[in-house]
Length: 177
Length: 177
Image (tube, rainbow over all chains, first blue to last red; front, top):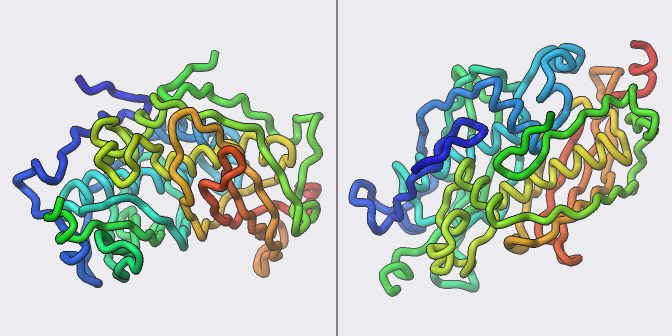
């Protein structure tokens, strides 16, 4: 039975790629530079902004409405780390385990993380992901590296962007298992 | 009264810089390239690895011990995002609001995020932060930009590193308030 945690999320029912009849798995070979994936919107609530920040980024402008008025932001805003975490959740649940069903083996790193605009309570975040570059592994035949640009928007204004490099399995390797 | 949340953290009692007699606030002028700050260790538990991943990064190798055995990692490992979040918590609670008491106005962005080694249950994470570069704001006299290199180690092996740019208040501006 799902347990509702502090942020209001229910744990996701995992759908292993091989058992999911609805999606076609995207291996390294199946992703092309320029491919774009978009997610549905996720609306962030004030309570979860405060809950998250109390755990991981307890600065006054993320946890205290009164103190936030005296900050550079003038009001309570979400931790940028929270926006990043929500973008990863959307990436995993709606792209890696959803529409694109990417044979993701893990993350290698991220770069160019920028927070362009503050995120406020009741903002609805949408993630857009584009394949920027593909690089075959030189040392391991079972995988390649895929660079994505991930962009989070609120009302069509970009609030955060980041690039990531993910390790993606090759189809040959999967079939040989 | 503190509420223990799903990760076992207790919300932090905030100590606004101006009311804290124990630390000397570090304004932009007070931070020097080469300054180093280190935190205590934080030991990550299996349950919180799974709880975090169910919320933000629900991939099999972060939430399911059996499935993790078939992954590239061979065992359950923490989401790299979780390691990043814990490093930010250590940065905020022990450096920005602790030893260094940095007059941080907010984060501008992060770069060069790399996960060098997996983080496993019961690993103890320590954060080391070094001031890499300082750049005065050209448009606003009340602030400057400070680039930090943040490094997370387990048993003296670096498991994650990232650079960040924070917006830090100038002392003149603080005194003029």
